[in-house]
Image (cartoon, rainbow, N blue to C red; front, side):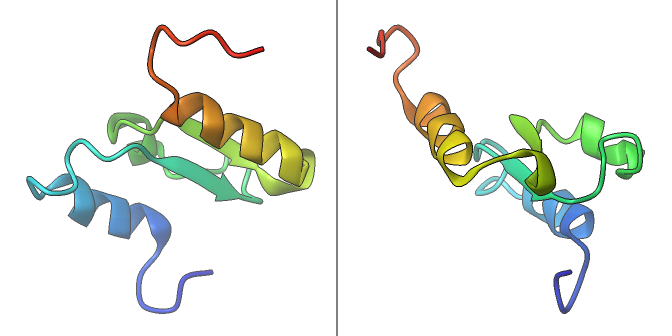
Length: 75
């Protein structure tokens, strides 16, 4: 848990600024998508990953995929 505000509160604040409106976001949590606040669906989240169901290498692959240029073919 984040100490000052929840992750969805932080994302709302981030998305409301010009600086944070286009940043790629991966939600990494142990809360299932069904339990997550519904407003997350409206905040342009690139991926929602449940930690308990994901290995570190799967997470690294997801980050690499999101940061790769759109037409780059990965081996």
